[in-house]
Length: 110
Image 1 (spheres, rainbow, N blue to C red):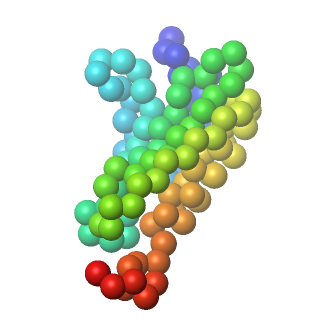
Image 2 (cartoon, helix red, strand yellow; image 1 turned 135 degrees about the vertical axis):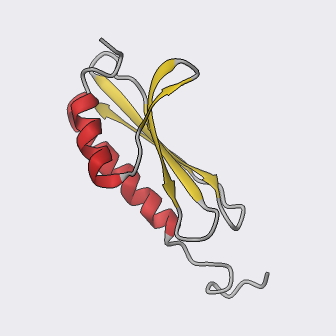
């Protein structure tokens, strides 16, 4: 039984609907994370789920690479029962980051 057994069914449903590939291991240890390609060339974001502990779970979203050197990082924590909501919040936040104005459309000169 992995550290994620309690939340894997929720993660699997979310991953099937939201991401192309869910990674389940990092450095030979159990992990749950996915990369989400941005709308701009070469952009990439990540959503990761910490193993649940004492009835709680945390979800993080971050930028891996952006075309304008923007850095994004946000974390949500809650009861394991709230995991679907936390994952949806993370995905919506990444979508907001992907749809941010470009330097050209915001009037900034590059």
